[in-house]
Image (cartoon, rainbow, N blue to C red; front, side, top):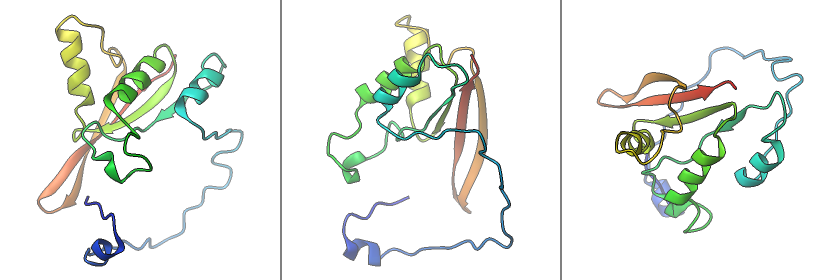
Length: 146
């Protein structure tokens, strides 16, 4: 949960590995699924009106320090809001956690009469995740099937 921006910082960190005890067999799991990777704006514009398309949306958390990303201006509040506007009336899976304040922001906008929350009426699933004996968070997946 920490960032290292230099190799010297990275060398000071401790890593823990969890070894998988058995192989995963996923033959044919994604058969018939086209996976596309490109800028989200181009992707939505190209596939928005296609049938049988579901978007997987996993932006950085709203409160994430983006300074270690490829550009200093990589991800801003306007990007979050643009993504939320873009997924209107589409099928999607949106991943976040309680470490991000995006759900709180959307709820605040709705309760104050600014706009309907983009997640209003969608299905929310959450799982408590424990990182250590005293650190954890809540993983959240929101989805809509139009």
